[in-house]
Image (cartoon, rainbow over all chains, first blue to last red):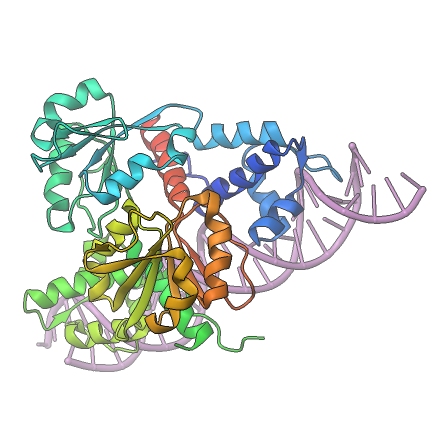
Length: 212
Length: 212
DNA sequence: TAGATTGTTAATCGATTAACAATC
DNA sequence: TAGATTGTTAATCGATTAACAATC
């Protein structure tokens, strides 16, 4: 029985784009940025930007806009990106490697502290400075890694089994890059990054807009 | 001035999950599957599943459910996945390689016919049977490749430039895996696959539900 | 038959958009 | 000052959920 309602998910999803635009403005030395400018940049409605930014608690000045530095700090804080998040990566294939090399994560407070794989050839190596351990060792390794978030990039055929294994080891949140609908105990958070649904939207748009 | 309204995007986004569940049922030899069962599997409301499936035009039998084979065919057809989609991949790094090896795409009618990169070491090789060409050659190569969809996996610093280059070459739809808001001419479709927004949602959920 | 599930029609809910006085 | 932009309050829009008669 949760009392506190989650903030609007669509708004949360848009905040990173706002942050991106606002950080660019910051880099250019701007002290203020208006909702109108952000909206133009992202092809959104100004009213939507203002409404979304209200969630951060930052108040703007009419005619001038929102204070850039404060806004950046407030978005970071709202998204909890001003805190260190430590994640482990399960699977050490191409997708895992791409994620471990993704330069945006460290900026957003996300550190990938270790990878786990079953392939003995990969175990013992390190990717972009991140060590690859044997998946067998997860129970033993996880406490020292201090990480409750796992990024799941294993083949879908073993996704459920591996999910159970890592939850057993103490993982309480999974960023799921497989196309499997994971069955997890109550209290475990799963965020599914669904390539298929993006492709579905793209495919329908191509048909509707380009007629093919 | 478009007359035909796009079908509901949330519904379209859920269809691939339905398809996944229904294909599993098909594999198990089931001839019918009820909305209730699909809903349970995906942790959704039965009424939502029924409403979504209505978009395919398939009618179910009370007490029994929806005909599995017909439903699969109808979803494929609705998503246009029964047609061959040819895409090129721009950038031939880890993410590109992961996508070229992703086994679900071929099943969904998506063929990655070529990759393009600026790195001379990668050019000339092939990844999972897909040739890697020099990005310089895109204008010359694209017509023969018969592909109007590009999957963009280049570093964000050059995303806009590369987008302009490939649009110039004839690409009319971009599946954008960078975190850049691309500026494109009217008529070009951009579908952004936004890692940051997924991470934002995850981060807020972890704070709200696990308090950390 | 009895009852689970369907499709439809209506109600609710939440997100987006509009309108506008306040103000820098 | 004049007017662009703000935050707020209200209206609209669309998606989700509820209710229920029809039916296999």
